[in-house]
Image (cartoon, rainbow, N blue to C red):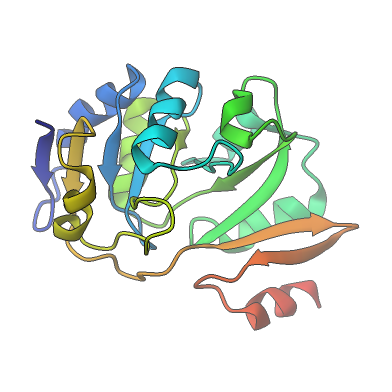
Length: 209
């Protein structure tokens, strides 16, 4: 039976130290972001990442992104970051944007489906940011749903699929945006949208111009 933390009307984020410690030690935690709920594990722990794939029934060929809480943490996991990529980060982080960057060897290959790139996002959600801060590691986080189903935006619905399969659940009420992040990759110095999300295409085009 997983532990449950209700933060819907709570601002004492020190309570996040317990689930953060679970993540650090290889456990799995369902937690809110501003887009949708995520199911997260230690981004440096190969076995923990494999557990996420397993409980989500996610194909290992489908890479998982990392959530971070600072530029320093981005630099810890990504390399050869270009000026254009840094500009996107400064403009849209924290927020509902995932950017594809070249990964460092510290990132397990299982996270990236053996690719040399990794998706990075800094969520605009204090609970998520504090959880990452307390864990001290980037959190490997796909959306909290069984693969192929709609992304999870409410804990009650999410737990119908994950009851007893995770270690900890953090409830912050319904997701504020309810739509997955926009995924962008910079190719030849130009941002290309790989998945349309809550940041509209015209916002990215304004940035390009």
